[in-house]
Amino acid sequence: MEPLTGTEVRVLGSLIEKDITTPEYYPLSMNALVNACNQKSNRDPVVQLDDQAVGAAIEGLQRHRMAGPARGADSRVTKYEQRLQEVFNFTRPELAVLCELLLRGPQTPGELRGRAERLHRFAALDDVQSALQKLMQREPPLAKILPRQPGTKESRYAHLFAGDVVEAGASSTSTLATASGNGDRIARLEEEVADLRRELCEMKDQVQKFRRQFE
Image (cartoon, rainbow, N blue to C red; front, side, top):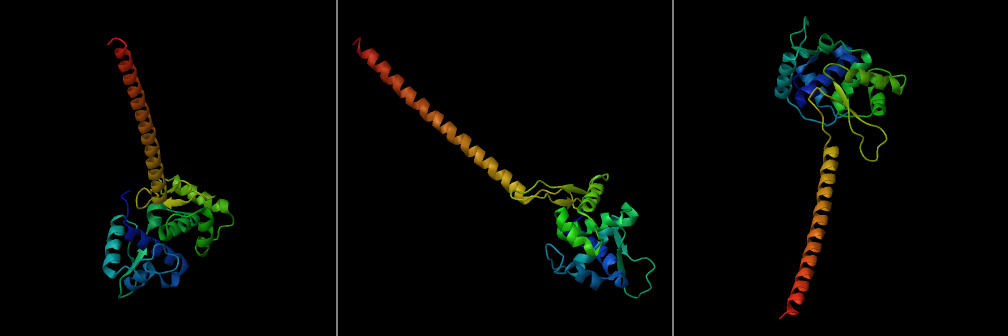
């Protein structure tokens, strides 16, 4: 699957959300879709997209068969809909979890359970994890578990619609650890070189003393 752009991810997530939470106003006009993408609630990061950016994202999603102009809509204004079910045939729990990941990025199962409640009520945390596992077991996988961050008890999960996810924090930690390890090795080498120089100087002194005995 070709990765989506960040704007395509936001547009797709917004369409899924409004399809479930406000079906009476769905499909969405361009103006309504732009407003949905630019919401300040339940969005991370908050963005400021215009009609042109959202229109380009719709075209990209249409190439992926994931969204496009609503079919058979009786309206003078073009409206847009998501078509993920036609491609993936998700269950409601899978769709709810995926929607939150698209709109807010990596999250723990606990965070997903609370935030996805307006999309689907999960009776237990195990139900969230079950939905995540199903997304991860797709071919190709549509979600992944991220390395646990220092000081946290729960691992976070991320969608893979925009390609693989590499945590900035994990990368920074790895870089720092590598730099620290390199620094330690350099320090040890410098100490060894200093010891060798001292030994060499001592050997030179001994040789000179030995020569003086025969002068």
